[in-house]
Length: 65
Image (cartoon, rainbow, N blue to C red; front, side, top):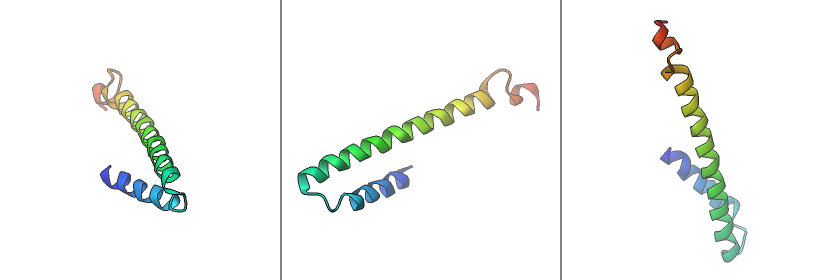
C-alpha cells in the first residue's frame, strides 16, 4: 500500500509540475484526497466481499466445502 501511495504522489507531482506554486499545492492536495477516497471505497468493497464470501454463516467455509 505504501508503494502505491508513493507512486501516486509522484504521479500527482509530475502532472501538476506546470502549475504555479500556490495553485500547484492546492491541486496536489485535492488530487491526493480524491485518490485516498477512491482507495478507501475500493478497500471497503474488498472487505465486504471477503466477509460475504468467507465469514458469513452460509459461506462455503461453514458448509464444509
